[in-house]
Image (cartoon, rainbow, N blue to C red):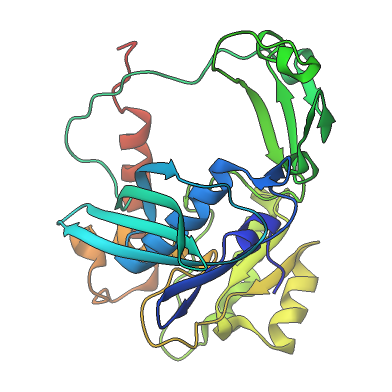
Length: 311
């Protein structure tokens, strides 16, 4: 299964001491791994240990530079709550601690209570008015720029010419060069409920045909192992110009966050918070499909009407 570069770079493997990983080349500035990348690597092990998929806050204390090579990661639960898990983490090499982390993790369930939002996105000019960041600029060699497309705010780009502005701020746009999405909302695109005597993969043709008409820009379909095989491959080829990637279960006998699969499971958890969808006791499949749509409409309305500072 093809994985995006960043997902591969922050992947961790469980072992007797906790987690092991390899810091690859290309995520660095002047040979030292970028701090944000290293934080993501440690946070990935922490969220897998705690069983909460989404980092709410993560603080990192950088004790020594991190260069390419193998590292070990420990992650411990400090407090397990109903909604949040507080954790500590540590990245080491040859017994020396390189990074110490503290984080709070949770699940992005639909917000039902009143919320207060302060702040907003930075004010950044359109991308074509910003300055493109290249791998080599000034005295720094930014290997990270080979993995990312970056456009900096003109007021924050003096450092590219060795002219520090005196302000510790960098604004701009960025995207992964391999097309990795920055975020996934997990919203419903289509639903098809089948009776128990029909395999899920055998009922995908009509669903994919409808989804293709509404969302022609989709390029990749992620599915579990139940959707592999030549019959499914023919369905994929017959319904559109896209490809399917199978996300298989892990061989480890404990919880671990699997690429892409957690997004689907998170959506199932969202709709299961509705009483009529906690059990499959409806007589008609169309009734179930209708309640799934109502559950997602309810979720989207809550997000759209969430309070903002301007209200």
